[in-house]
Length: 261
Image: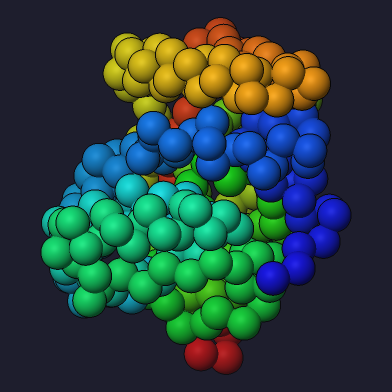
């Protein structure tokens, strides 16, 4: 499958890679990790408290990674989920996990470009966009594209972050998020901020794993050592930013009904 240079650049950035040259090595660097961003339990909690009959839902998980969220939701709710991701290695891992947790019949995983998927996938009860960044474009375009994939009254889950201060930057402030939702014709049902202690512990474990795999790659590809060192550094910088400047947050939204519905 062909992916445009722009898509590859956005994908690399979403996984904290500074260059697309690192993309072929990301599956190796991340091989020990199942959860690649979103915390499945946080998403489960929002759904359990605010969504009626979640077991009857059809769910689209865009940039599903290794399927941690999809498999978890299928297991706890029994809902049907379609997950799409760029990396064949991630999709294969997700399929193995679905089989391991006895939810293969509920989970359909496929390799694809989510920029193409949002143009054709329609009629879902829920869409999940977890820790993906700007792969679909800016915040406004992303929300608009996500809205199209769900029915009127359908749910949208976005796992991202907000600036702790009201200032311009890569991330929106709380005020900026709320204005985005108002303009985007969605209702905010609930949100959940990340548990900072839990996040710090998880990041420490993941960083140790990534550093170990980076050292292995440096031995195998010494001429590319700068790439692997850069990735470890960028991962650490993101962890530091989450601890000091931004706060991880998961939003649960509901698509407003169209006027002619």
